[in-house]
Length: 296
Image 1 (cartoon, one colour):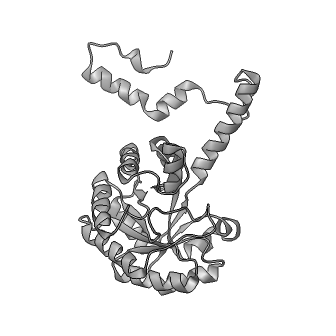
Image 2 (cartoon, rainbow, N blue to C red):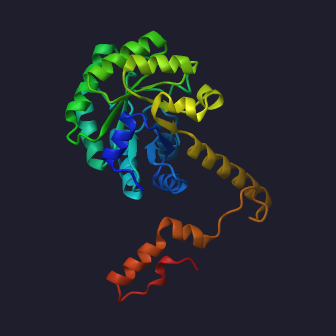
Image 3 (spheres, rainbow, N blue to C red):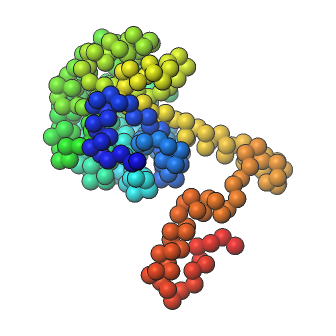
């Protein structure tokens, strides 16, 4: 059963952990939903790599990210969580960014406290964060810009020290954030995450990266998290398969030896919804041939 925005919010706030995977476009979002994940997150890392072929350094604009997110929302029935980076500016920018992504139909937004333009913390040794008062102002602006009370505001802190992360978590919750997302590099044990959960007073949103994916069990993650996200697995899986197949293809000049065999056209056409379009054509364009949408 598809979660409504209200059910999604209730699950998160009551720490009935929602397991999520990171999409980089509409098609990957559909595969995530088909696999059985209850929600989809648009990964800034994935969007930047897929849309621009560039690293996650806030090189795309708010409107470019919004275009991808809007397509994802339209492609799936599941709740969509949008990574809105730093909200692309100060508190005034955060107001417009929140309103635009809410209008696109997302169930939640993730806003972080890095300086703008941000840098992905898994790709660099360290990042700069804005003063806590400025970050609180952006969270307040985002919360007040929200007109749908079911939309979740996830405040991410990129603070490197556990003490600073906990201090910021408390301040962000006081400003109206619904849940808190620490970066994986900050905490090194489940005990540290439990301390963060207690300090914040709300469930955590965790990106399952690095030591979290290697050392923690699903039960341990669920003991602290309202949301647990495999942000990079879909992108990296697709990239690896594409790289391997293309390398073999350019070598052999035939598809017979591909390490990851290509699916027959018909199942893919059914997955992507060609049959639905064909039916619509039959209903609304009855004077035109209906085989336009089928592969030869």
